[in-house]
Amino acid sequence: MRVVIAEDDVLLRQGLSLLLESEGFDVVAAVGDGEAFLEEFHNADVGVVDVRMPPSFTNEGLKAAAEARARRPNFPILVLSAYVEDRYAGQLLAAGSVGLGYLLKERVGQVGDFVDALRRVASGGTVMDPEVISQLMTRRRADDPIRSLTPRESEVLALMAAGLDNASIAGRLVVSETAVSKHIGNIFAKLGLSAGDSGHRRVRAVLAYLHS
Amino acid sequence: MIKERFSSWLLTLRYLSIESFTAALSLCFLLVGAMLVPLGLITGLPFATTAVAMLREWADLARKRTTEFSGRRLSTSYPDITAQSYKGRFELLWSRTTRKDALWLLIHGVPLLAIGFFTIALPFAALNSLLIPLYWEPVSHFTEIANPYPVTSWAAAATMPLVAAVYAALAWWLIPVTGRMFSRSQARLLDIGRATLLAERVTALTASKAAALEAHSSELRRIERDLHDGAQNKLVGVVMMLGMTMRSLETGGSNTLEHLRRAQDAATDALSTLRTMVHDIYPPVLDELGLDGALSAVAVRSACPCTLHISQLQRSPAAIEAAAYFVVAEAVTNTNKYGSATRLDVSLEREIVDNVDCLVLTVEDDGVGGAVERPAGGLAGIRRRVETFEGTMTLTSPRGGPTTIKAVLPCGW
Image 1 (cartoon, chains in turn orange, cyan):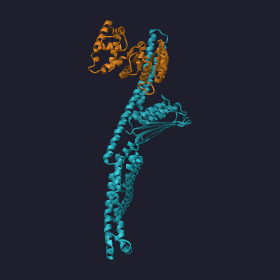
Image 2 (tube, rainbow over the protein chains, first blue to last red):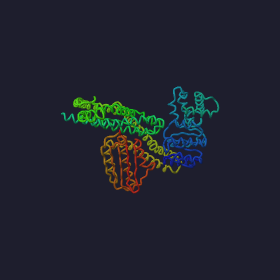
Image 3 (cartoon, chains in turn cyan, green):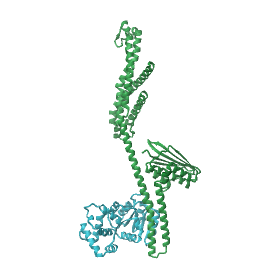
Image 4 (cartoon, each protein chain N blue to C red):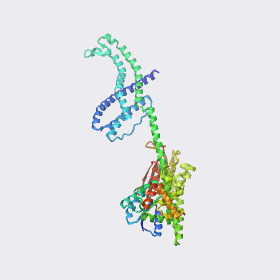
């Protein structure tokens, strides 16, 4: 799988390249800013982009990601951020959630999970950092249906947002897969998502989280 | 006693004479202005800025004369003339200061002009009255003399010394009174007034408070950015290397040791970044030695002989002192690193620049020059730090030297 990396910190950029190459990815380009990323992303299957890059060190990465997806719809991008800002997540998801990821930078330390996340994004999945989810949870208004979720249901929803399927969620929470399905059914009910295509409902449940 | 009163009377007469003649000019100014304003309104007020500038000059001259006469200081504060558009020029014409000056011009040019000429004429009238008995007879063939009644006989002429005495008495009494009236009314018309002065001071204080808050928040932003993009990135690097080490242990890879070594390097790097950053936020030495002491320490440490000139240094806000220290320390480090300098001069002084109290820092070396600012270099760091406080940094480094870095840090608040 071909990857293009945009990260302004030289050491991190080299480290990421090294990491991804040792995991069997083909790093076609590793660049230091959004402009260069937009020149290179055509040759790749997925992009890994830092949010803050030169020249203004604010949200160049997000802009570059949005621009890349405008030029090539649903081009998979995993955005890395030094801190969680649910506004960023909202901006990213506003234009569609297919093939999008938003993770804290330090998640690269869990190499296995990080690589899994990157693969899920590359294959069109949505991956949200657990921090994003918990930040959104605490900010909800009291009458928000999300607030009516039990702690266990929130956990399940968070893992759904992280892009896991039922079996993986069951594995993480050390419960049976049927229990997970039951929780997910409750979540759909509480969020008022009618039965239909279950995959679509999963995305909508996650989006219900992120769009405040 | 009498002599003193006479000399003060003479001074007042001089003041009144000057005022009367300038009042005549004021009247001309007024008439020309009255003609030009309606014309200007139609043609887009082309002369508004020039006219207002002239009016201000004219009023300032009157302030100087009145201050010289009465000893009373008249303060004023004109807003800058920067009107570009028609609306701007109109607002300039209708601004509070312009209206105030125009009112003075009107009073100076009309009632004060009349009163002034009447008053200064009195002594001359007295003199003239004394002379009438000598010349009335030949002159009466051509014209009739009235002073203030017709003088057509020797009897009437004989009363003239009496008339002269009345004029003289009037002059003696009226000139000081009129002089006081002139200086008081002009002072009132031309002075900015206590309420306005206080109001302006409040505005200035509010602005400087806002500037202080702004500087504070941009300093916080700078620290936040340094932490996120500096230390935190390095720590992410550590975590990443450790993750790769674990991965290589799991898969039985051969370069585990290499990954571990990289992780340790990254951690060491993160620590030193953090240390530099904390030091840059507020160098502990500033607390111990104050800015001058801390800078002396920098000068002593410099490999290249460094002389320090510090004058009129008062305590500044901690953030400013930290920035000043950073600028000098960074500049000295830079010189030692690149410049082939044999001499370094560092000077630090408090100066008023554009009405703002500033800390002015100059670092000059006799190296080869040709220094350029690179995006992540030391000079750019200095600029960034200085601009946080709305200060300015200028670098002059011609090829062949000398290199001068001048930083101006406002600290009036």
